[in-house]
Image (cartoon, rainbow, N blue to C red; front, side, top):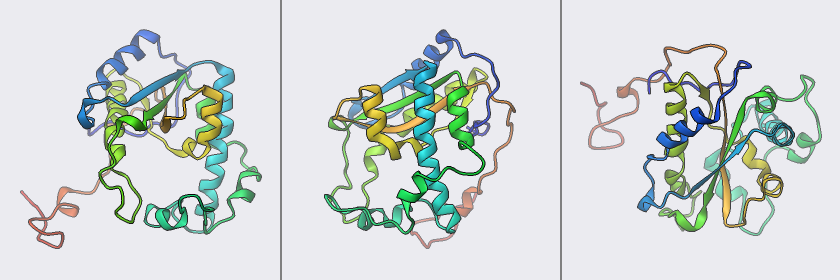
Length: 229
């Protein structure tokens, strides 16, 4: 857990099917609501499909950068509920349509380019019929259903790290979910939760930077004293 980074640069080394199978075989023990295991993984190795994914990924990255260029957090969750009313138009603080049709001077985004060249891209789909959204109807963005999917995703990174490989759990591709579902034949009942490119890291990370425990844990109250040893 202390040495599993978000790997975004990969060598040309392959990732054999037997190794990938073992990675998924370990990852499947991730915690999930009711042990319903709502995930379906699409293992994408075909180069033409990876190129399609990369092009769609780049569209999501263009939207991301439009926010960054404006000095904003992309699609900040604190505003997601009221900016996207059910059945109504999305109201964003940046012009996403212009962003999508405007290629960046640097060319295709590095992460999109990596997705086209990495040995495998995993598309993590979730069956909405099998997950529980306990925070439904609270007047804010519902996020609890993700608790049945993302531990599995992180287990993939941990299992890959144990075998000398790396990857990153990303959600930019979700912005183009409709196109991805059409391309990959994903049923209506499933949503795209994440995309995980996997391969051999260019650089092995042995130390990660994170806030200490006392920076985020308090005792008995949100404003209580910091939790220390």
